[in-house]
Length: 257
Image (cartoon, rainbow, N blue to C red; front, side):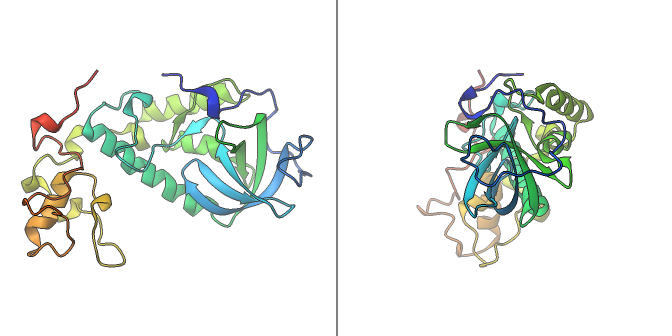
């Protein structure tokens, strides 16, 4: 398992096995406070939330010890997720699970009262509060690992061994992002079924960010006359050429290290 940059993780020896029964913290910037009751006011993505603290301050919390995939195929890093190939398919797979992790966090946390517990250094390299979130007494960080929505962000902190075991179990079971099959990703327009296409956005207009692959975008371009979604911006008959091609053109595929 690769070890990542530690600038946004926190070593610590705090007891994080369970939330304190009656957190009294009010201010996330008070060095004497290590646990708070707060309300999740915004889910940024699967591992980052904005939480309102008892003093009324809203602060950004980065979940300690876990990392969910990015929601953009161009920003994903398959090398950080052992067993996921450094290919366009691998990146699209992680993007899909990044979106899934974000949706899961939204469904479980948005508007919820949570217990926020820091486990060492107060803040990471981006100024975010590094913490474990407990929802009804359950460790949400560990739940992401158990359900295959995240990988271990590997550094030293109190729950590192428990989190590593949760990730290892999820990988062994092949759940969530660890369930990768190259054949799940179409390589040609002719292989794209309607079920493979993303749902039409609420405003009725696709854009290239709605698709995982160029094949999907070209399927829409081919099936709807006149390109009403403006997917072929340069008029060359090819949609969303910045998207991964998945073998439509061999030269577009990345070279594996």
